[in-house]
Amino acid sequence: MKRLVTLMLTGVIAMTSVTAFAAEIPRETIPLTAEETQVVIVENLIGDVLDQVASGEIGYGIASSEADKRIRNAVFEDRTNGYGYGILSAIANNALRVTRDRVLRPELHAQYEEYLRALLNDLIADVANGRDIENAREEAYTRIYQAVNPAYTPREIGTDFCYMDTPAVDMAMFPIARKLLLGAN
Image 1 (cartoon, rainbow, N blue to C red):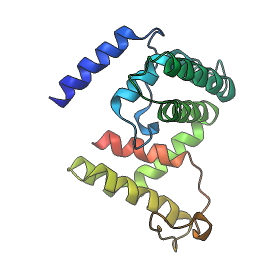
Image 2 (cartoon, helix red, strand yellow):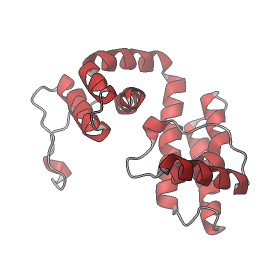
Image 3 (tube, rainbow, N blue to C red):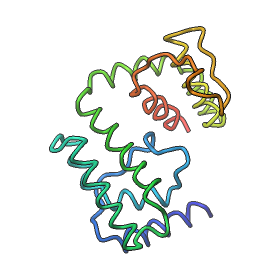
Image 4 (cartoon, rainbow, N blue to C red):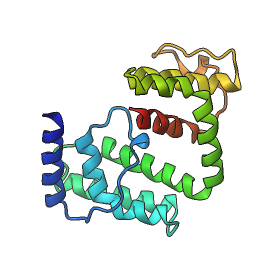
């Protein structure tokens, strides 16, 4: 039933959108708090911009500026089903940032994917066997940090960031880890 509602909503949004749909937002870049409806709205607004980034035609700065302009205008014109600029912009900019990074560093992304597949192999299998993906994602992120510093332990939410001793890790690893887990789901 949920899929039917999502499909119907997607169809309605696609038909009412002014901007032509092009690229799909990579699911591993979507903020954890985002809803599928919000993602579809963003895809309809910036899909062609995401295509340009993926093909290397434009960089992140120009793409982000264009995406922000389109989202801001859509919010002002009440074409976002009541969703605000904050979440829609985060969805767009995450997708643009990761897509641009993949264009600039494809070999490194391939290496990270191979490395993370080995590091998270048991978690990927657990998700395939029904483990909660959110719980697996949290453990995957912890393992990534612990691969750099074995003494790392995650802190409780609400801990002041200045007291956290988080190891330096290439941020490209996190969407790749999510991609691997989502692929197993």
